[in-house]
Amino acid sequence: MGFRLSHLSLAVSLVALALAGVAIYRNTYEAMIMNNGSPDFDLLETGAVSILTLNNEKRNSDKDNLNQQLSQESCVFSAVKGVVDSAIDNETRMGASLIRLHFHDCFVDGCDGGILLDDINGTFTGEQTSPPNNNSVRGFEVIAQAKQSVIDTCPNISVSCADILAIAARDSLAKLGGQTYTVALGRSDGTTANFTGALTQLPAPSDNLTVQIQKFSDKNFTVREMVALAGAHTVGFARCSTVCTSGNVNSAAQLQCNCSATLTDSDLQQLDTTPTMFDKDYYDNFNSNQGIMFSDQVLTGDATTAGFVTDYSNDVSVFLGDFAAAMIKMGDLPPSAGAQLEIRDVCSRVNPTSVASM
Image (cartoon, rainbow, N blue to C red; front, side, top):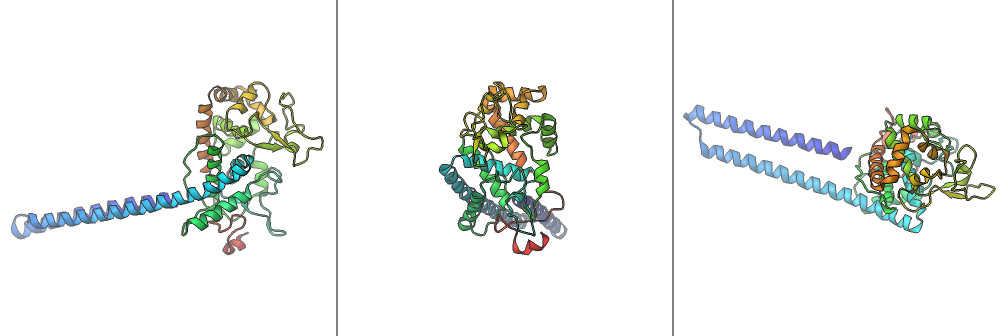
């Protein structure tokens, strides 16, 4: 957002300079007519050359500023990508976790980095311990490392933790075989989080189609965009204790839960047959009634969504394109109106000057 405002300011400055040049030229011309009855073309030419020189200098300065801005952005993207790539090389599952972390941040009161805030005993309860996130969302250490990498390698550049979440999700998607997309910088970090909002706003494995559509509609997503974003389940794993329980699991699934009888948090269940590849197998499984989660499989049971599932199952490029577009839209979800915002120095806590606001 800050970069886009700077572009607008530069454009306004150029227009003002051009108008000033026209005024100088006209005043000079009129003065020559009044004094001599005819204009002094040498003076006019000199004035025009001076104005042209000023305009060229201004354009060169603006070009230098733009090049510097692009260089700064490139530094940020490179710093985050290096950390994300290394994390996924170390553990492929981390890519899916970082995509999910970005989703769980933005879907609760907008992209404000609220999910990254640690609880403070007796003073502050954030989103991490809310039931949809507790012992489930992960990748916090990767975001912290990416933030530190930006600080270390891109001096004098202020980038929010919410921006880093967005970049990390995009780079994870590309690393796992998805379609990359442009991430615009300029998000801000919130100074608080919403424990209850995480519980009520995030889609749940037991949600029927009507509830899912309403939750996505509340964020201004179309039904097609909802089905596309659900495709994030084509990578990664879920906890057995979440998906392989009554009400959450598709009871007719042939892709059986491969979990222990105790269903501990450490037991994991893949959500499609290729959990390390961002592909269309997730939708193919639906067509065979093999979607593991209830909330996923119901997408094929109604004409409202079934056609989109078929589209994505028939053509992976359509799915990848729609998913990338929906991720851009999700990454633009604004923080709640009136939220206090900042650029956090450390992603897990607000800045010292903001502690009182918590």
